[in-house]
Amino acid sequence: MRPKGSAEALEMQQRIAAKLLQEGKGIREAARLVGAAPSAVHGWKRALEEGGMEALKAKVPARRAARLSSEQKAELEQLLLAGPLAAGFPTDLWTAKRVAQVIERHFKRAGAWSG
Image (cartoon, rainbow, N blue to C red; front, side, top):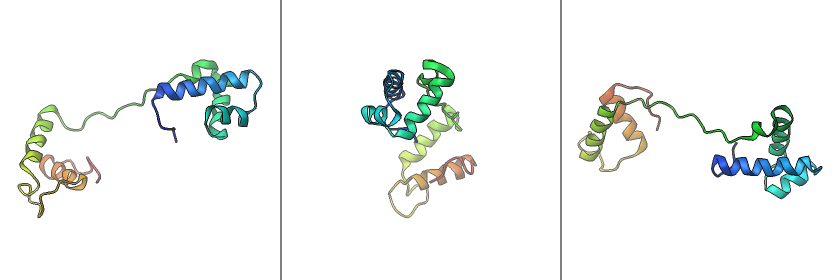
């Protein structure tokens, strides 16, 4: 699992660890110095050996394409602004599960959201 922080911050941590490894530091010492798990530094070392510093470049995670069109999003906004009672729920509280149910019912997109 990736540590907290931006992709750029992770890349910087990896590059510092790589520099330490190149200077002859061990995996555990490099991990301690950059605040990472030894297993992570081991993986970075392997990536460095296989692909050089280029292998440690920040990777921007791919985003999933939106499942609702712009028009449908605008329609959903209106449904949500009308409130949960208007959508047929017994209380005036939106939850992720209820929003998912509205999307599934109104746009017939079963499984579009889990909640």
